[in-house]
Image (cartoon, rainbow, N blue to C red; front, side):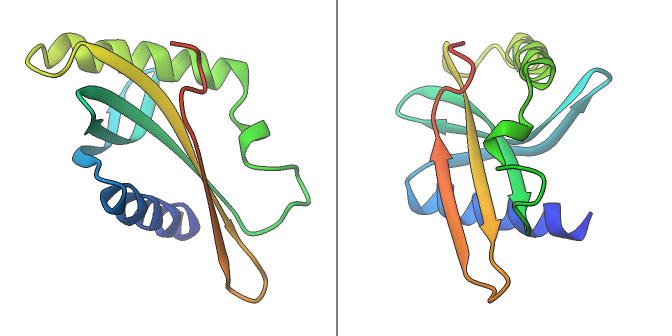
Length: 116
């Protein structure tokens, strides 16, 4: 999906500018995928990126449903288990990219969406 990839590129650049160290992207395990994995302030951060070009179907944050959060947590735990040298502190964030019809871009970064 070109829109999703574009959004992930914007989110990656945004996070790097905020001082996040990107260590992995598009990590897939059978039950889930994590768009961006980063380290910030000795915390392992798993980032779900949502890109919207219309608000017709609701905002981006609403689209990260409960079942999606469960899949993110399960995948994040698997990633941490298979990479034991990474920070112990874990967090799941969302970066919401809203591309307006005039091509302006709004970015919203919501930390700790899962209470993980």
